[in-house]
Picture (spheres, protein in one colour):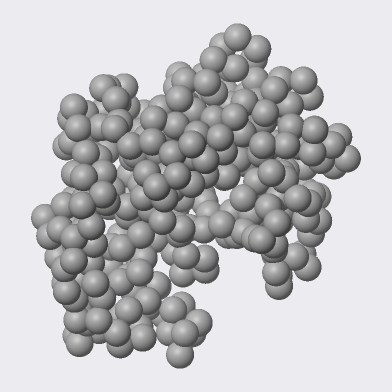
Length: 317
Ligand code: SER
């Protein structure tokens, strides 16, 4: 992994992953791919090259891969679960036609590809506690349908053409740099903003709804470590369960109140997000990732909460 294209570099994951790769991979060129309207700014723009990289434009992707001799693509373009329910055709276009364009370029030019999957790739019939690596998926959201198809298509390109595709199933990701855009797990990010601003938080997810969550530094570590893992150890590829913490809204709010006792919360449950959340695992079993490439998260809910509050106070106050 030397010359890397991050597609979706201004999104929640991409904005941090691009900077981490630029900092940590010596001699690398990390191209920040973006779409018009979501241009990179500040440090992201100034610290390396940036190119328009719309996954639906196969020629543009091929040109960037040739120009920078790209050997690895992080494909982070996606509509998250709640938005994808409102715009299912656009979600399919970006997540599936876009992926096909990337995999074709990768096949022709020998590029490795990371495309995240998600807890959203599971569905109501999936065992919800200790969700195994290999189990029933059958999601009912468009986001989930595209994520299962992403896993299958990525494995297809690996088995048929030898394209080095690898992936993790991300839990809900919590971070302070860039907000997520329209996911079911977003509440667990937004409540920290409300806590720091002293505003009442309106929670769209019902109490008692458990979902896997993860702090962004652990998610970034997973994305980098998996792409650097010894391929001979990988029995799975698309996609690995990774887990770090699981909680329901009341547990999260209780933890935040240890540091911000005045946090005020009101529930206004969104039926679309709630149906999605209920269908997702409560907690995944990530033993395959631990065995095959040494996955191990660092942050607990308490450590994450302290770090989130510290950085959001710096950012917002
Ligand atoms: N965080 C995502 C969502 O809620 C799940 O991968 O859509």
